[in-house]
Each structure stands twice: as C-alpha cells, then as structure tokens.
Image (cartoon, rainbow, N blue to C red; front, top):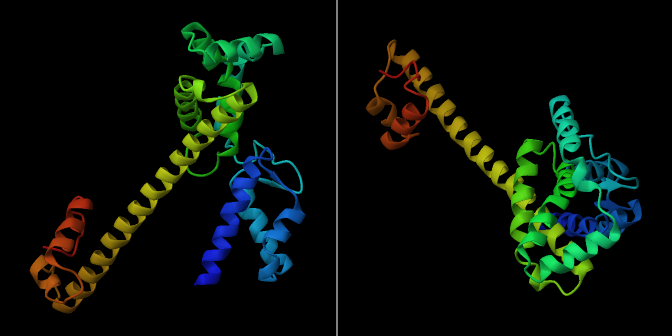
Length: 243
C-alpha cells in the first residue's frame, strides 16, 4: 500500500512539473521519476497514457485537440472566431494593460479580462476529455480569470502576474474536473446500490413466487429498511420485484 501511495505521489509531482513546462514532460523525466519502481516498457506506456489523458505531452507536444469531440471542435472554431479580435494585442499594449490593471484601474482590468479570453480557450483544450464539456471549462476559466485580474496587486511584475493568472485559471478548471469526477463516482455508487437491491429483490421474489415487501427483503439481512426505501425512491419506484 505504501508503494502505491508513493507511485500516486510521483504521478502528482509529474503533473505539477508539467504545468511549469507548458504541459510537457520529457521521457527522461518520467523514467527518472519512476526509477525506483523498475517499470516495464508496457507499464511506462500506461503512465504516458495516463499523463496524456490529463493533457500532458510526453516526449512530444500534446495535441490540444486530441480529446475534443467533433461537436467541441466545431464549438471551439466558432468561439475562437468570435473572440479573435481580443487576440490582436502588441507587446506594448499588453504591458501597459497589465500594469494599469495591477494598479486597480477598472477599465484596464476589463480590457485585460477580454485579452485573456483566447488564452483561457487554449488552456481549456488541455482539460478536455475528462468528463467536462469544453464550453463549461472555458466558462469556468473565464470566471477565474476575471476574479484573478481583481487580485493582480499581489503580483510583483508582469511575468508574475501572467503566472498568477494562469495558475488561477488552471486550478479552476482542475477543480471543475475533480468536482465532476466526484459527482460521477457518487452517482455510480448510488446506481450500484440500487442494482444490488433490485437483484436481491429479484432473487427473493423468485424464491417466494411473488413480489416481496421491503420488510421481507430487509429481513434477509443484506440491506436495512432505510437503504431499501432510498433505493426505491432513487429508482422512481421501478424496482419491479418489490410490492
């Protein structure tokens, strides 16, 4: 178990390192991280696949559109066309806007938020394919960008401000992905519980030659009355073998 925890910790470290390298890792970095585990080529390939699932390229830049569905690609194309005007910013204007926004100038902050729209869309592609729609990732990233711009006074320079905003945006998207995964896992557990109650009711009904009551099923000792009633409620009363 301790080895499994260490393995998971190494994966987490690599994901954090990739964030500082434009979501890219060399094969050597991955191999070095797991040097003490003596992984076979097949298992290293599984690690690569795991990292790529999280938008991290290993040995080669990650294809940002690899995890997009056809519908998401179409949405992204139209969205990028709509916001293309905000990407046309020269270095001088960008620096001036960042500096003014950091000093709390509201107009500059609003301008910076719009300037960040294309960057947020690019970053959202890295988190696609993990159970959250691209449109929702972009929306969450834009909200985080707007909130981050209001806090730029904490950044010492433009480089620091850009890094701060990127971190805010990525963490917001990662949080949305994690929240969705937790929700799906909970729903899977609930569905599994309902299926188990239904299976138990089916077997008991077969023994009795009729539908059984909640109390009769609870008397078997596998599920409490409360658990069975909850399963019935969640299924909308569609556990057929319960009277």
